[in-house]
Image: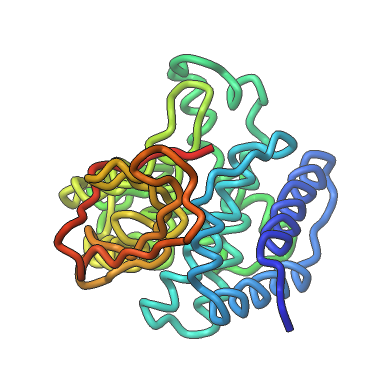
Length: 295
């Protein structure tokens, strides 16, 4: 059966949006429905992982959805892909995916004027945002989720060096599945625009994550994320040394700086009609100059 992955992505995004509305009006979510959504996401990734990841990294215009909602769906899908690479059990994958979808529900309890504020946040405003993991746990406990999900959610903003929140946990004291979400949360948040800062894309975002030096993230998980997603993720765009613009269509895990790309704009600036494919790892004539943002 052919599946429209863009539609599947949009359906999940609409559900996350609806959940936020339900929470704001003190409604209840159905646990089984959320578990079914995660099982569906797992199936999608196992069937066509590259298409799903490319959907995450393609520039999208969702004026009806908040950045947090888009980020939630992206991190859920990426976390499941990384969880498979880390050889998590099926139960762990389900718990990881559910936690990714629910971890920011507490943001619905943060005043909208704080979330949409342009410019620097005050100490009080920042403190309110840092309350959102506990708000999320309060919500999901009331929904009937167990301790495993709550423990993952409460730790997802803890840092390897102990400077995270809300409890200042360090290293192995941080829930293992939370550490996966922490890396992806940090990476994806750089790539999404915020009222108070520009987004970072492609290589620059990954470079900042790689330069962490054990401050925020578990280096073992970080290395798997970099190998799996790549320095230039599938679905992102790059400029080559001949001035052509290309879409990344495959990641080379052994040589992350040299993915397989498809030419979309020729070196003379015209639209490419022949879908020319270049494996940069097998062609010394080409190298990537920079990542680019394509509307």
